[in-house]
Each structure stands twice: as structure tokens, then as C-alpha cells.
Image 1 (cartoon, rainbow, N blue to C red):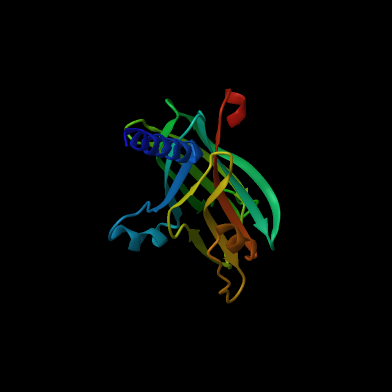
Image 2: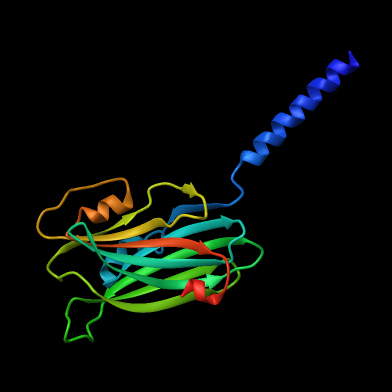
Length: 205
């Protein structure tokens, strides 16, 4: 009887160990968030600002969190740029990524110029930010943000699209749940992505 019990316990331990070893060791969870909360959300469109905010929770062996954005026109990739990046410690990151896009009225040569600010904020640990400029869409075009609708979890070897901005001429109702597909279907679009690296400063440039 004792042997039977010991055998069952041994098998149970093997099963638990096997399940634990097959679980992902490195994961990235991105979740919807808002830069403007409560009643302030009503005012956001009137600030001539297009804002986005995403919660990011990471655990693994990477050392930096990095942002990049892609510009798409009529389904074709036009440009890709690295944006804000920062290192973190102990293989853990718990914070937010935010973006704001405004028209840069100071660029008389290019009235379509957009100013893009990206920030990475970690709880109780400050933030890192970058301001960049890009040739945007015409002021007469309609536009709208494409946001995460629910949390998603991926492994840390992937780039993940976390926010988008689409612009279009005339009436436009094409919609996809997937951020990338949504932007690729637009006349002009921007996709914000997050990814992780291990190693030197050169990897986050």
C-alpha cells in the first residue's frame, strides 16, 4: 500500500514538474489604458492632440524596453523609426507607454508635418521620452486612433503592435480587430510597436 501511495506521489510530482517547465519563462503583457481619464477624455480631441496609452508588464531576461513606429500608406510600409527606449533592472518592467501626436505648425515648408512624442514610464522610477517629426497626413483627411480592446500576452522575442493612428479620405468604415490590419487598410497610418532587448546600449538605438 505504501509503495502504491509513493508511486502515485512520484507520478504527480513528475506531472507538476513537467507542466511547470513547459510554461513560458518570459512574457510580455500589454493592456489598454488611457492618457486622459474620466471627464478629461471629453476634452482630449480639443487639445489638437491625438493621445495613446498602454500598460506594459514584463518578466524575463531582457534588459531594455524599446518603442518604434512605422508609417504606412495605402497598405505599403514607407518608414520605420526607433522611438523612446530605456533600460530596467532585475528582468522586470511594470509601467506604461504613451504617445501624443500634434501638428507642427512651425514647419511652414511642410504643413503636414507631425510632432510625435513617445514616453516610457515605470512605476516610481521616472520616465524616458523622445520627440520626433514625421511627414504626416493632410489636414483635410479624417483620422482616428486604433487602440487595444483587451489585454494580450506574447513572448519577449516578438514585436507587438500596441497602438495605431489611421487617416483616410472621405467616408471610411473599414475596421479590423487587429491593429496592424486596421492601419494597413487606411490611406495613411502609423503603428506603434514595443519590443525588448538584452545587451549593450547599441541595441536600443
